[in-house]
Length: 288
Picture 1 (cartoon, rainbow, N blue to C red):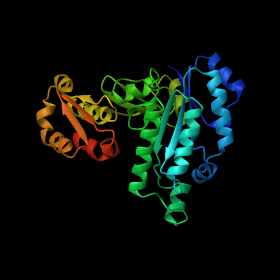
Picture 2 (cartoon, rainbow, N blue to C red):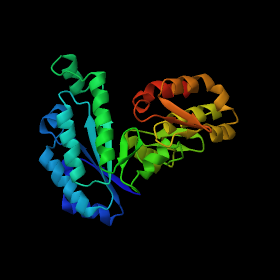
Picture 3 (cartoon, helix red, strand yellow):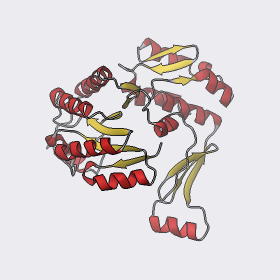
């Protein structure tokens, strides 16, 4: 799997063929919405017509097509979100990511919310849109395999599954992160400094951290709980040398009693209906 990410307004048939020619076999388009008013709110440089054209061109060029959508946009309604989902599904992508909007500080969107020019959605409205995506995509043959990701059979994102499994990955380039042999590191972010380090045969690594066994186990649980497969605590216990079932007994019991997780034969899973939405709050309990 070799994926290229692209914005819809940068896509042309010629570029797509060039990408295929150099080895890319999967493309992910940052569509975000198929509603022009919502795209304007997000400050995107494309409109819905451009997004549709890009999806159709990518569909013709690639056998593995993914699109990113966003819910929780100020002003978004169940009707507008449903229409975006309906139109997206009709374009036959193999994979759909549906991300909840995070309004980050020091962004134009954050400034508009702070100045009361935009009204953020309530938690209940946010949760309703999430559940709507689950129902709509499931009914159309897209299985939810992670909090924000849905795929047709055989089209789960392989590199994302690697991250969520807390397995090793190599990062190449300025600012790239990697995780190898229990060490998490990141490269210099400045391109000139990065190139100078390579030319002088110095390591471009700017920072690194070696994880202890319990730190690794905690992060593996946190990441694994993002997925529908969950995490095998007994296997992790063997690998890190600590009985995680005993260590986290009270946390697991509370999660199961609250209906946000299931636990059987060492396998811990968050429930898609309730647990996935609370992942950030519950997963941190396992970090050491």
